[in-house]
Length: 140
Image (cartoon, rainbow, N blue to C red; front, top):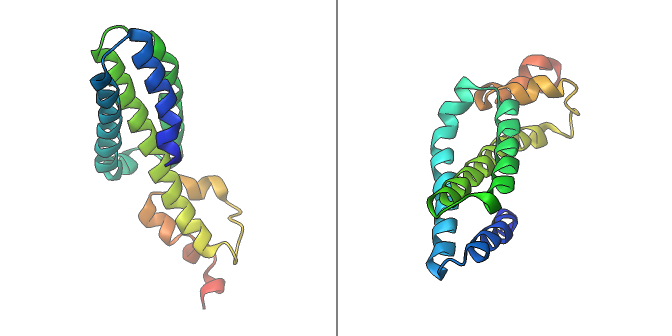
């Protein structure tokens, strides 16, 4: 819910600044949703090719640049592409962070993840066994 509210204001400003009809706002939100869905579908493949912490950084950079470009994107098509990239960045950040946090929170009472950077660079399958491999005495 918070992520939708995060993008409502820039989309509303983009619509109002151009004097576009009401359907344009719906098209902007649909474009945002398409970016989210497509990135969710590709994220498994992407996480095998790129470190997960780099996915988060790229997602945040994509969101920032896209929101900065949205008010100045000319025409009707380019704002839709910018909203698509905002959705892609949001999905990249939220899925990656939530997956790693779910794994970390399960073991948080036992450890406070001393090798934090290494843990966040692991793909989900390796992160699931990270604690067992590095702290075998804790799981006897």
